[in-house]
Image 1 (tube, rainbow, N blue to C red):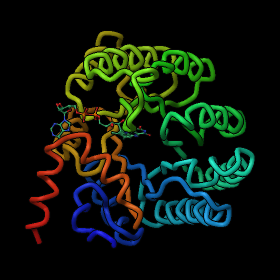
Image 2 (cartoon, helix red, strand yellow; image 1 turned 90 degrees about the horizontal axis):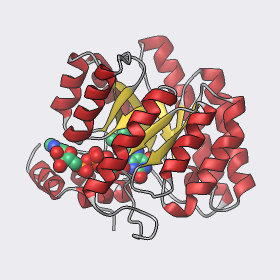
Image 3 (cartoon, protein in one colour; image 1 turned 45 degrees about the vertical axis):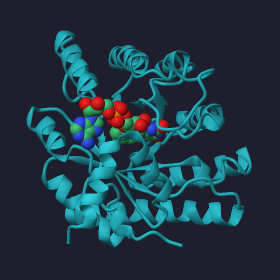
Length: 287
Ligand code: FDA
């Protein structure tokens, strides 16, 4: 049984790209940058993975047209497991190269979202294989909760790769991931500082005031330009704060998910904060 989209609409822009584009224009109008995520996760058949890759390519072409005709500003975020990473590494890599060729042609940046720890290493090594050919069109995500991330931050800084830093959204065991929020915050702050000093244009992705304030303090203290990094938040979470941060003179990019496969994404948002369940319930009673 499909759940009604009304449940998800606080966190998911629309089920179609046509429905999503007006929302992207509206965010741009408020001074917010956007990254679009066509929802979907692990795909286990090659034909379907190729189709998903074709959809990402169509998305790049549509965004390029929208930019030329209407000045729309958006990058995309993708999941490697949707284009065949878990079916076969080389097959997934082939699809990623096919996608990045169009990303370069259209000059649109592609962020590789980070999924569960079963694919962390394969995501990083696939990234490292394509990065030398597409240094301005592909970036990666690192998760502060993983114990391995200190090394991965060094590894990505050595490449001068563009990193999005987040806490991490998947359920991981204590053997490989910090479980306590204070520990995760402490690691996040350490990596944020390292990326700002030694990385390239990092994205600080969080709704957590403590981490946002720590970032603002650090860049002020080190006289780091406000256009040398960006904050990122998810669509529908703290929308007033998103605009306020732009008004303070920082860059803010909104991660805008859309598409019919919204259930896993939506479930992760509900698991993160009980208040999110309240937002969903009140949405049910809005027109
Ligand atoms: P968290 O949910 O831990 O909340 C901490 C504090 O933030 C709260 O106590 C409160 O102070 C404040 N806050 C949060 N929500 C609020 C609200 N609605 N109203 C008021 N205050 C609120 N994960 C992953 O594993 N791989 C990925 O590729 C990505 N990509 C990604 C992109 C972007 C742009 C973002 C913002 C996040 C991700 N994530 C992700 C998800 C990330 O790992 C993490 O799960 C969520 O961002 C939740 O952690 P936060 O730090 O945002 O706040």
